[in-house]
Amino acid sequence: GAGVSQSPSNKVTEKGKDVELRCDPISGHTALYWYRQSLGQGLEFLIYFQGNSAPDKSGLPSDRFSAERTGGSVSTLTIQRTQQEDSAVYLCASSFDSLYSPLHFGNGTRLTVT
Amino acid sequence: GQQVMQIPQYQHVQEGEDFTTYCNSSTTLSNIQWYKQRPGGHPVFLIQLVKSGEVKKQKRLTFQFGEAKKNSSLHITATQTTDVGTYFCAMKTSYDKVIFGPGTSLSVIP
Image 1 (tube, rainbow over the protein chains, first blue to last red):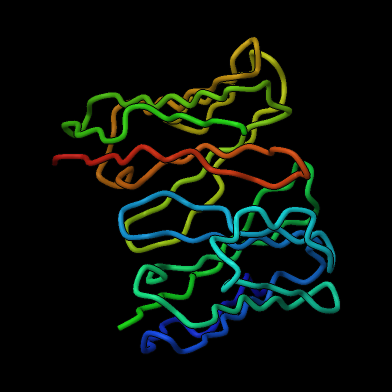
Image 2 (cartoon, rainbow over the protein chains, first blue to last red):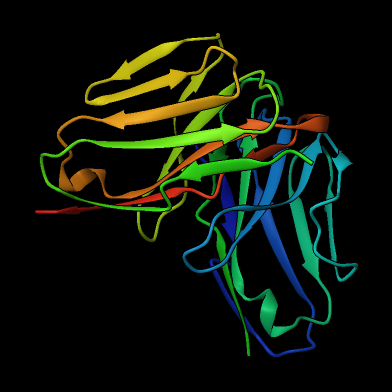
């Protein structure tokens, strides 16, 4: 079956513009995660959804970042007024549940803010 | 908050040598997962450990969960160039979010 799908794969935007990143999880997966990975760095937790609700939003770097999930499926991560420090790869992952299931990652969206 | 350490940060080995990475948590864990990320790729799940003292093997890879369930290790016997990548441990914290260790980047010299 299809894996986790993220779009766009690459996004170049000008500083100050808003961007929207999309994640389509594996069908039936109830948990969905967003991470940010800067070049050569680790995975920075951003937000996690169980169904449509987000129990923990503590990883969002600032109030310019927001995320939502509708219908227990697709999720969008929105970054308003982008800054150069937002440049990174944004990875989405889904899992069957939030307990012991492994995370399945998408290929990520590479965001470049010029 | 919960702290996760992984050592070493980088490891360069000659092909055929062994490799070990260690993951340490500041709190007791319910389980631990290991992932591998090839250069330019995304993290891929390798294995999960749940029981205290658990040892699991996958071909040349051996995974161990500490008795106190606060640390774990991944050992690769006789490394090959296909082992190149970054190895991350991952664990659940409050509200069931999953956080990743900083990773160990492995380079294998042919």
